[in-house]
Amino acid sequence: MKKVIYLGMIALILVSFIGCSDGTKEDIVDISINEIISKVESNTEDIKNLSNKNLIEQQELAEKIGLDLEAVEAGVIKKPDMGVSPMEIIIIKAKDKSKVEEIKASLEKHTEDLMTSYEGYGAAAVELIENRVLITNDRYILLAVHLEGDQISESFNSLFQ
Image 1 (tube, rainbow, N blue to C red):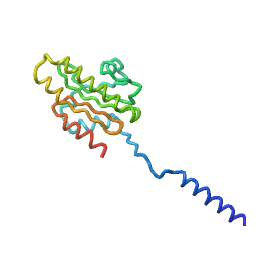
Image 2 (image 1 turned 120 degrees about the horizontal axis):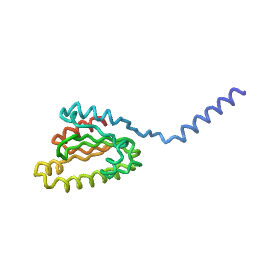
Image 3 (image 1 turned 90 degrees about the vertical axis):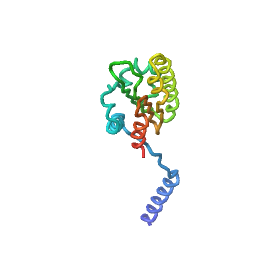
Image 4 (image 1 turned 180 degrees about the vertical axis):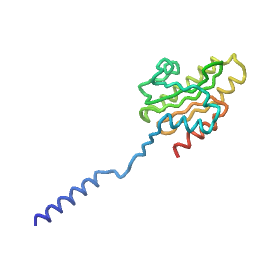
């Protein structure tokens, strides 16, 4: 008799646990910034020569871009060390999805500031900024001010498929 009662209690507990579950599981994408950079570099050879700057460690640079570091889990900017060029690739991982639009707006403002800064440097610099790629995928944001922006965005997006 005790066995029947125990089995009944176990069955009741299992049913209550199953009943409390909503049956869905949110897909959590967790890709490191370094993995994204490696993928982008493997498909776009000339960006390997750009320097990497960690946006969390380089707070002054993050502030210049207009980023609120409280919203950023990780981030890197790749740009030439020398020369006058608006070329840059920024990859950011937001702390959560609710921060993505805020970060994206900061990057849009940053490209407007780039446009203002490079207006006097000729049509090629302005065109590079105008043809920028700014995309998001899950908690990740990519800004590519680069001649091969489309190829960079394809590499970025391929990690999320």
